[in-house]
Each structure stands twice: as structure tokens, then as C-alpha cells.
Length: 77
Image (cartoon, rainbow, N blue to C red; front, top):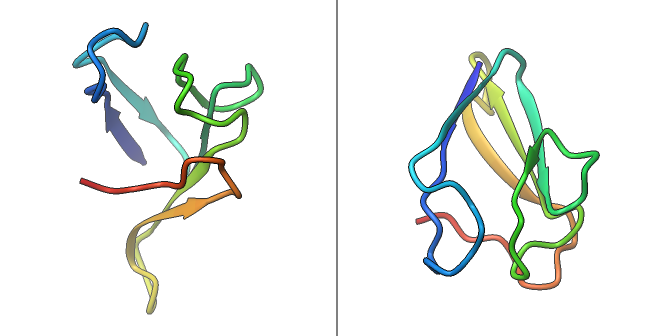
């Protein structure tokens, strides 16, 4: 399960601040396009921006953020 809480860096972006979404799977796509699991309506977000992946076992246990070739890059704060 992946829980995401949104806090836009730019308050003028049309994204719901503080909104929490819970996904009952281990992989979530993020981007501006409607086909993503988590859609962010911001000009700083590519249509297919990143992937969040959660694993509870093995060497890769934990949450990984994978950039999908976005124009502006992906950063974790």
C-alpha cells in the first residue's frame, strides 16, 4: 500500500493541498495525463512523470521514486 499526501511547492498550482490518496498496490504512476494513477495538474509535471514503487522485502525494501524521463526531473524533499 502506498499513501501519498500532496503539498504543492507553488501555491498557484491547481492541486489540492494536503489531500491524501491511498493506493492498495505496490506501484503507482504519477503525471499530468489522465491515464496516471495520481494526476497532478501542474505545468512542472510531465504527462508521464514518475513511478512510486513500494516493496516490503529484499534489497529494494522500502519506497522507490523512479523518474520516467520527465522534462524537469524528479526530486524528493
